[in-house]
Length: 78
Image 1 (tube, rainbow, N blue to C red):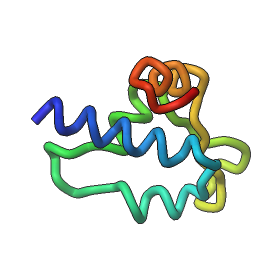
Image 2: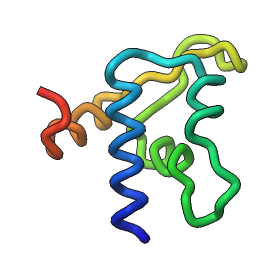
Image 3: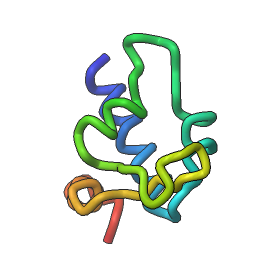
Image 4: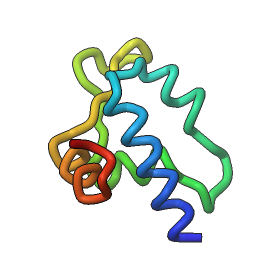
């Protein structure tokens, strides 16, 4: 299960790397109630994505420098 979750975290970070996304859009697409698939929470906890600017629901989510480095390591960002 860990490998599948890592793959999904990678997909999430890559999706946000294409362009900053509104927080509400990210949560609608990636938040889950399944305790075994905590994709959004894992990406935040690992420091790969962060909320930028407005901390409210209209804030944006961006990929951090660590997230960009992780994407490069996995061949998902040039």
